[in-house]
Length: 433
Ligand code: URA
Image 1 (cartoon, rainbow, N blue to C red):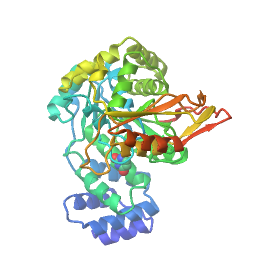
Image 2 (image 1 turned 180 degrees about the horizontal axis):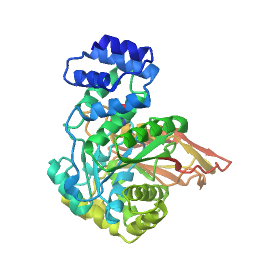
Image 3 (image 1 turned 120 degrees about the vertical axis):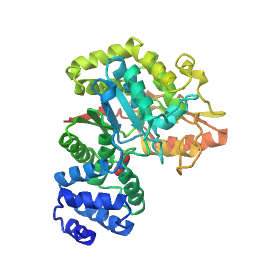
């Protein structure tokens, strides 16, 4: 088998066999296929696409390039969730304890933030002493005992993706549905949970800019998950505006604690409860409606808050933060911006809010960047709400007042206030199963 011929076949839109796809992935992972050939093949995939069978074969070949975990020791049906990423997306921190409080098991490996979207691991690491790096046995033990555990992606899982993703970033081949699908799903399948819920986001602050593109990606991922024998479902959710009130690591943990303590209810708490209900129903706990009731009760009764505190303690963190959130890191300076005129907030471009937070130090511009855990934005009014001139719109937190004012100006520029009340858009757009 010659890599040259396989590149040509994909370029001509001729389908490869499972064996040929394994040859490419194994050869590249072992260093036998050079980067220039792999880049050419991935560019051919970008331009010509792959069939569903080829995408599934690519995903499984990538999954098998490294270690695959077994969830057997957890002793129950395990359920994983993936979000394609967005601004202020802290749903994992809410739904993991909600599902655990309802008797489900959530073993979750998450990523760090790079660029304008935040990473769940960075958010958790803003909790004093919280460890996101645990031995696999401990990860599974905590999942079994508490019902949820969230750690950073293990280096031994899917080495093919690590090499391919680095190359895609340099060769303008990130933006391809079969390549995104195989990258995400190979990691989900290697983790080995029985059920997978995929939260595919669309809008300004998302990878997929339109619902149509999000549908294509969601369908491809659900198809691969099912071919691999998993209970798999996708939800399409709106990421045109930031999710919830707070953006920034410790600020997002603070919002999670306020919701778990019952102090706040907002579209984020509603979406997280819905996602938790889908996870519970995928893992055989009943209809989505019944699971929604269970999830609401877990949230309202404080059971989910106790699970969150238990998980923090099991992972070495200071669980006192759930009682005393002031123990979370706080920035030195802040600045509150006011509404420039009367009207309705008709849009707030989430990508710009993410970029403003990045400038404040809440995210990374390079893998080695240091994070200011306290930095970020707290919104005082949401898209669709009426505001009057001079009313506080949002508060920016950062190292200096100058930095905060600069970020506030950027966010004000991307916030539209109009005389007309905008049409309400549901956060949950579609379910694909
Ligand atoms: N996230 C991934 O893990 N891989 C991609 O290709 C895109 C987003």
